[in-house]
Length: 310
Image (cartoon, rainbow, N blue to C red; front, side):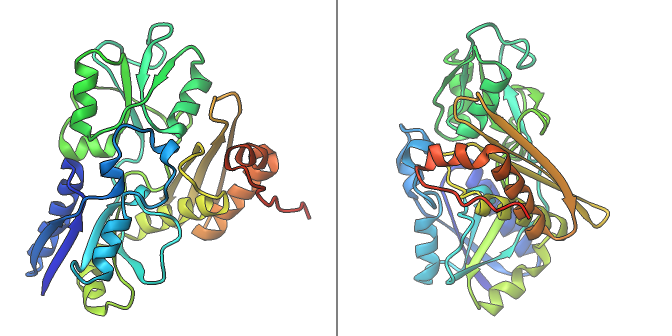
């Protein structure tokens, strides 16, 4: 079968697309990759939270899918909005990489060792809020661009440290600046971090059948749980929400965080269960009850419905 993959043009996105292409070729498929430039790739000088457009890394790729210019899209799952259009479906979520964040530095071995008022680079409000909760003195500065660009800025001394996803550094084999893998309890990752999503047109049975072998049960359960939490909380990129589910022996354990952007309030909640969607929603509701609703209201500017206690 001939399959055309739509992908962003960054080094990491192309690694991901080539990885999936390689797996498909092993099964005898003829595969080509088409690079598609997205809104998020074009806006590189503004923090993502300030842009606030859902699907800014996926919209143009979905348009190519819809127009039948490509047959499947390979995304970082955390870039994919939690609510997909009915025109599309996620055909496979391959086995996930380590979802944790890391501290990269040329100078310091850990967050604790960073000097007072150190410059730390990240454009993620989720990372910024959790960092400020750990060290209120840190000076957080925007950091956009692909992995190479970010590491170059670190090497040239623009920052004392930067925070990146471990998965991307592993995939690109750029691990020389990793100094500390941040425990989920300190730095809860983004929902879906470390996972890929392979998106197709809904009802495309041939593509679905070709991709079925790539779908990993544990990774799908974990990310479904995390995304259910994100959906219940309103899930915009303008607010610091973290979610990390771990599947083990038929059960999921979910840890999640909602934080105020300045890090002054950090709410953490965890629970275990078998149903991914129910577990995600119940942990989200526990966070809302504990004060997450008021944090989210102040950021979104709209009222988040809080479930009534029975």
